[in-house]
Length: 550
Image (cartoon, rainbow, N blue to C red; front, side):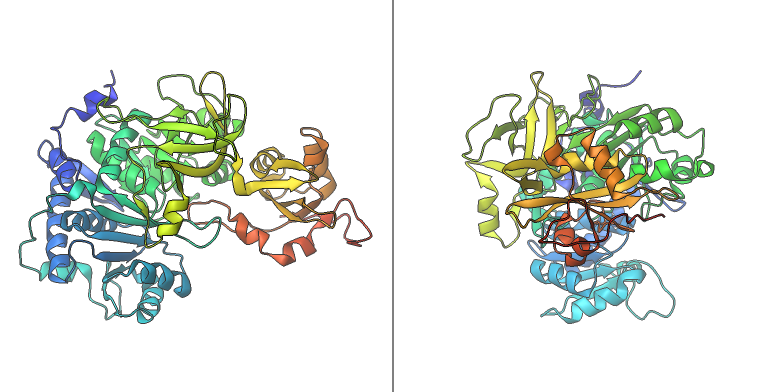
């Protein structure tokens, strides 16, 4: 018989909402219980806490104190979690960055954050050194894993030679900023989202309710540790329930089911793109007899639900909604109706003493709209970000009377469930009509030959915009632009049918598999390569009948 979420949390003493006390409350009860699994190694809760203490002593000896920033440029590795908790203990701030960054991107993020130290992986060392060289003053540099022929000091060696005790934990840690997460940049240049310790702890505890986590649950973390999903839900969710987290360096579709089986994972979080990739992989890669029973996937499609519940044997699929700025906002209830096509309802903390999140849907004048009418989602939550780093104007623009403006259009149904319509910036204005890019993505993405799709607005000779669909076909499948248009025409209003269809080998994506539509909008070659299904004298295009076979 499973325990209620609040019962799971109350197996441990109360804490002050700092990461240090949150961890201590668990270690006191189960110091020898496994907490982190990584490539065959198991780190107990007690050992993890001891490594946090040693790392805090090292950082303090290296000049990291309250308010200072420490950068990380690495694929997933347990040291990232150790450094997060060590920074929080000192009142310092961790800045984990995308390991796929080039020099320009890394230099921008670390320069914007003003890091004092940097921890890199062997595979990111060249970028880290080049980016570091552009910063003034230059941060110190450590390597988180041993690599042959590399002269950079190893983190483990530095820890072994640091004998001073760490300073006492900061007394006001719960409300101090401890993390800067730079936005994925799907709409432009990244901003540093500031999160405090209290918000991270509450997010982990709320995830216990969202996924009905139990003390024996093992969460498989395949999403990157520079992302709130991995840090707040997988890592801190495991600590909150008294379970464990199996950390994978990266998501690998070919080895995913083997990893699930070998780690004994019972829960995982996936982006929709990753889930779709798994559905397309050879049957031979699937490992039956696994323990995976729960998956947090957004957005879900009927095809995914069918594949995961019947083919893969994962009975509990939860779709939700959140942003880097407002983690864990909405979700379909674990114990309740799970509505297909809905992002659910408010997802509260299991403790009724924690303030419940609240939402509003508003029009362009910021007046509330009735149920059944799309409106921009405004949100309040105890896990709300503290603002954008060194960007007071952007922070001010993101709020209205204390409500965070998500920029996402939602529709509330009479039963209170919400349905995502589109990003406000993903609305295509065509001949006086508003078209949701997300809706077109969903409809075209359901075509049996389509692996991925992104629809954008492109300039029209008549004013406003025309619709362009950039389509990636499934391996071995083919389709024509006319077939894609006919597919949409059979399902949506005529004004939503794409005029342009471009078959492309891949779509630009962030490390968390979100399609970067802003890059498509800036790609002038995309429109030139697309087939125009409504040729006009102004465009004079002659590329009819093109298709791509993959």
